[in-house]
Image (cartoon, rainbow, N blue to C red; front, side, top):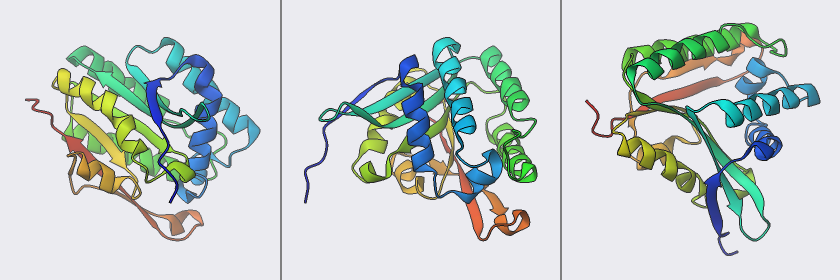
Length: 220
């Protein structure tokens, strides 16, 4: 059995955006829903996502991007993206921005209707369970396939969870089936209000289940 890698958890920088895009693509390369919503990982699509990440890292004070670095290779092997809304005003602005940013499917979407169904489901459930409360959102948690099941996902959660706990913010996330066990282990509650999408409606096979989960963190 090979030794576990030694990992450093650090804030991601603007220069990391291309690496974050590549890792995200590798982590979701077998996701039919992701391809339906955003299109295949063409160069144009990847460049667009890199630009989005770079803009957020550089200028959005509500976001936190955290990277996991293999100390032996100095390569990024995973990352997480958090949104923090510590007061009512920030929460409302964040909700409005999310709705605006996801109102229209990207031109690259294979199935605009799949995109609309998923993000409509996200918005409805966030409003139902969180409303206008101050909150922290985990937007993305990805680890390269070859580095999975080595504790790196839990390490990537640490800084975000510590900040949320210090501010007594509830933490909300939408979990893939792969990440579900980790989030349960970290104390997240499954709200039993999952986003269930029948991919056959959009030309694929199978059903995807995205669990909506909440960690109250002692918030009111």
